[in-house]
Image 1 (cartoon, helix red, strand yellow):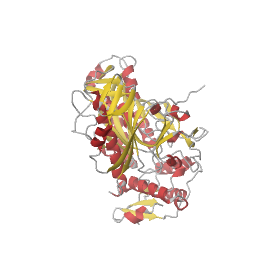
Image 2 (cartoon, rainbow over the protein chains, first blue to last red; image 1 turned 60 degrees about the vertical axis):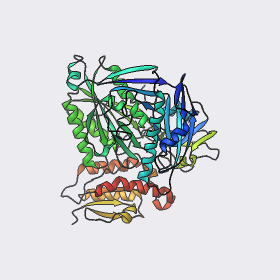
Image 3 (cartoon, each protein chain N blue to C red; image 1 turned 135 degrees about the horizontal axis):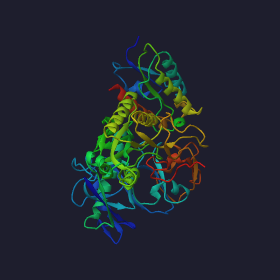
Length: 427
Length: 126
């Protein structure tokens, strides 16, 4: 199974009357985009905006971020949601690199996050470095929460697919091949290199806390093997709009840095034999079931070691620790990727659970650190939500438009895939 | 002696929306704070009830969410050590910064929290 992932490096974006790419510039037919998305009659209106790195602009609250993608040989970029139930991860897929579709919309006021395109807050989100096509969306009155979340989710995917079609006929600037061998071949290859797997935990607590695999609600899955190329190719979509700092946007699923890094090391320092996806349900019995089954799969794959990444915090910490302990009990070494809620001074216990076997942990930063964000000339969305967000508090929003808030409120600030740049070093 | 699981909560939506009590009992007091709900569950664990749901919310900043719903089992013969460990960790996680009573918070915000809290726990009734 081989995926050719092509990237077109976009240098600028503008709206015009035709969808195309010319000399590094992405031109989006805005009217055509509106016609495409308005087929969902639950949408009332959308403001389309383009924001660029360095702009004195804040986007708040952010629902999801998605990378525009296109398949020149045919196939689905978000299988199960748009188009047919295609199995992805093979053939050629083209990404419009340096761009992102960003949806905003207030399903509930307290959890979605902030993207600052400049200033101190820009350092805490990777999306200050992408050219963002922002869809500020309102839905029809009377739409319930479930539908509101679904409308925004589908809007983002539809827009990313439509915009991605501008890549038709354009040769990518780079093409990287990712091969995923059958399990037995992968284990037989690479001699004595340690067999390493990736346990990819997906948020699955319920409304606004969900993730979808081929459009299947991750709450309903048993842990399963998935090809890393499927992960890279749109198989996993976010329905999660809580805890901005460590939720995995769809963009992060499409560009999972753990998988990219494992591919770089494959055949050199390790044998990257596969990926297990698992969930983070609320019911304790389901946490036990999923962690036990994950450990069973890891054992059956013959893993020597596994990297485990969490999504979110709070009770998902219990899933992380269960996964760690049960793999270690089977003599599978683990490395955990997580973030911390260690208090504003960083001195409190970071996770809600622990086990002695969790002795190799990489931190993505402390979400309780407080930051002062300056006022911005332009705000897309609802700035008053700052007071309500996770990480915000009464008085977070200053009279001049500045925000005092924990970095918990910034999209991707402590992302547990390591997509951002916070960590801790011991001296 | 009840033989059904029990939702212990200060979320009045459970009273308003939850009609069928054939699978669960409700212990709802909308005047209670999160701290009172958590301590009540802790006391229940000492009396032999076992946790069915994890007592810590996922992804909510703890001191900001005024609502708490926890599902526990009917009392069993012995107390469950793991349940006790989880509830004590939950108490520690709040670090003394318990949320205000929902009755002291802005109504629209409480409604948001109430709807999501209900959504996350209602699966236990299905």
